[in-house]
Image 1 (tube, one colour):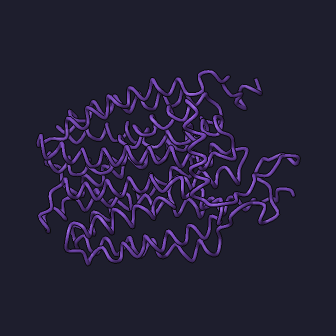
Image 2 (cartoon, rainbow, N blue to C red):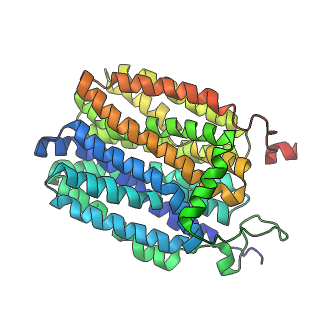
Image 3 (spheres, rainbow, N blue to C red):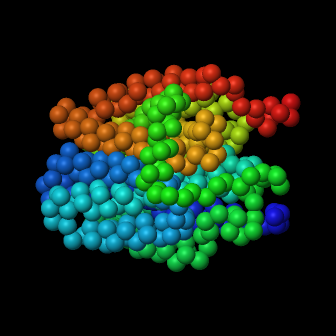
Length: 422
């Protein structure tokens, strides 16, 4: 098996990018509908935040089982089933009248579906289809989160203001369901299915073993391996903080916090979306760096800078200029943690277990996001300000920066291509 001039793995990566792009658009929806739902139904922000927290929590909880299911039954079929579930739930969202409807439709159904077509998917595609350039591909795929915010958030805010949140929900449902034919036609499970090797894989390399047995059992066996490894706790702990400080707190509560400080909703949504431009640059650059620099050092820098920016945030609402500075600084850092985290997981547990172990660590990421989404709303209700939530999250990031340096402490640092060339 030899590599053709055009490698089909790039097509698979392109389809994956589009799915992650739309998934990012869905995860941007809560920032737009919190205030409209609060105004129309009289639900408290804490109640709405509970539904968002359930969605984020299930998104993470499904991750390891998503990886095991894709290993056992294939990537394409799993993606199609998840997209059908998400699209149906979004189409039913305009019919809700009670708060528990929001929890079931958005929290349970959308959250579970996103868990099967989220960042674990990027890790599986990058690991299966690429050996060389894996970090770069992972960086590009995770940057789809940034691009999704950029493309979806401002238009969704405009539609919500002009036509209401129901029209916005139907647009997102149509975008999700429209992906299904594309996935069916172009997505492939493994390079071996097309007579190919992973990009950059040597001719004598052993192909990844196909998973057998019950996916649930396989996922829990991988968890058992992780619980006996110190690196698992360090990776899971830092990723918990990552989730709490990004999609849990900023993704859910930055727009409401802006509105609290007199910044109009569309302007606030545009600000959050502008982060996506720098997020795209940061994620792609981080993927490139993770192929060349010690990933522990990268994570330490990323979490340290993120913590400082969150400590600055409560004092940046005075002017749109200072808030824009926060958006640039924070945007570069938002998902830059993912490529080095995936690389460290591979170094700690091996290529074969990377996807499932990343699934469990993503579970911790989303658990952190769920806690921040819920308790951020609770603190806003209790103290009538988001300052406490922002400050606590910033301090947690500084702790995570120190934790990152101890990942693989007793293991020699990997030899990067730049080091090998030197």
